[in-house]
Length: 477
Ligand code: SAH
Ligand code: SF4
Ligand code: F3S
Image (cartoon, rainbow, N blue to C red; front, side):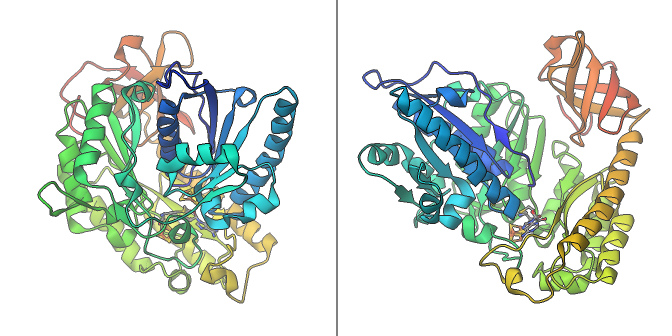
């Protein structure tokens, strides 16, 4: 789930039903994982009926939300530097007679709570991920009182409160969309804040997910990525009162007319059950690309991380998955310099990477997070050692990614066309492995899964030639 930061680059919309309410504008910036991106859309959905419409320009915003990430120190610090800039903006707008409400949401909000008001006085509202449905009420309260805080973990799941996106919102989502199906984590890896910021593992009921996917499909979405901090631990209620696993959920979603591709992220190796592996063999709509974080290749470090899997267990699991779906490609997350990591432990990680061969990866220096067990361990690794190991990790992972991409030359791939290409006469889409593909073709192919021969493969993107249609295995049209 290692992501990038995203500003919701959406044009000022014309929605909002509150005739008597003054029209206000909203600017949302997301940090961290895809769940934050999804939640940011949800917050915009919740505020739209209040007459608060999105703008892509922060200067125009009466309400600014920073949807924050706490996973590593740098992610958290970015928020405070952004808040410093917002404070100046708020002051400038105030002198022009315009009020600005600044909201901190997401995992920093959950983890730091009131501390945020202490560090940055310009903040009006701090709201944790379980309380987004209460945003309209919190904004009203912020009209009369300073420092409104809501970081409760309510007994009822927020899934029960948050309505699905409106059709107006859905129209902006293009051909590929995220759908949150699970939130929170019970694994407690010793380095990780997520179980504290997102709380206990909770799954969304099947019906609500399917209804959302149906709405998305009706609006032109062809690919859904099911997201959760620990998505393969999914066990959502069915209308009959039973529990569905992730493989059962994907089977149900595969029946939704129009949905050609299904992905899911992020998975824990311990929850890759036999039925999910079998789904990769039998379910053509499930894309052959799996993000399966391993973190380390050393058993000693994996145990200290409380990962609940071993090196050989991971390698055997990958072999089993590849047995079920030979063309599957793997992606992973790695941490360099976890406390106590010796040169030998690190070499075991490099060796695991050589053995598994990854198509893509995210790697990070270990970042001690207050309140997590690993932060209190002796044997913290010096910064320069972490940096040096990270560089070696990234060199190897980069090499594997480039090789994987180059191997595509001469292959035939199914490409989901998403948008106009870089140049006139080109269209751009994604391969089953999430590689960007440029093809000569007309814009009316957007939303289709086309067959393309890859004529050249750069390190980061592929160039293809359209082939005649056929009923493609692996990507039904
Ligand atoms: N739920 C996912 C990952 C959540 S966080 C999973 O189980 O894999 C995304 C990634 O951030 C993790 O996989 C890990 O590689 C990295 N990460 C989390 N905490 C970290 C820390 N304290 N220091 C460095 N990297 C960390
Ligand atoms: Fe964090 Fe581990 Fe849970 Fe992933 S499985 S969210 S790394 S505690
Ligand atoms: Fe970051 Fe929270 Fe996601 S800590 S990675 S935004 S779950």
